[in-house]
Image (tube, rainbow, N blue to C red; front, top):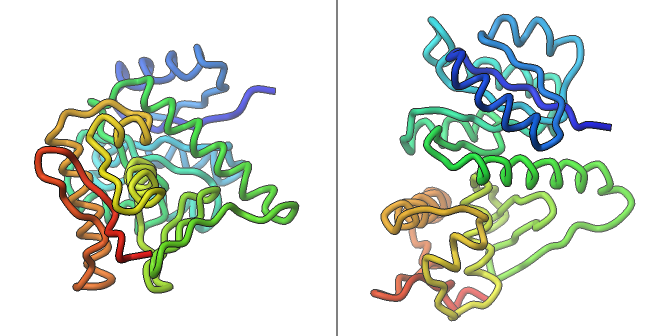
Length: 233
């Protein structure tokens, strides 16, 4: 049976482009152009994953509102924000509202599809959590739940996008070992320029520093890449 994805995007050309891409990959797609039309349908039955634009028609934050409404119906529905807006404030706000990932529209379609696959895999892991224990990775004050793609620092949750989680996971696997930008991109199943990789690392650091101002887990190896502080094990 095909897995059901909902796409909420107000630009017709973009909506049809993404619908076609998802359908070519074998997904069943329900597409909506507004928050209201999507909500009227979804309140009566949820998909397996939702991809939502932040700005919807006359509602510049309609996607955020829809995310909140969907979270009240389900704590585990995978939600991806797909948007032209790229800022730390929007990303963190979206994640705090309950989204699982936040990606910009200039992302390669193959990499967006990789995010969808990863989140559906995580949803499956959640569904089977009662049958088998989750894979955990602990490094000192850091705890990663690999199946659920969640992070905790000193027992406090740290909200990460899928890209950020896998970059962090690549560093944490081998403390003290340098991971270059190509290795971090491979771990996150994406292709980014050097400045964008640097921006992701900065965002990860800032999120941990909000939980602990003395955070020094991620170190820069100038000219080479980044490593997880071997003292944080």
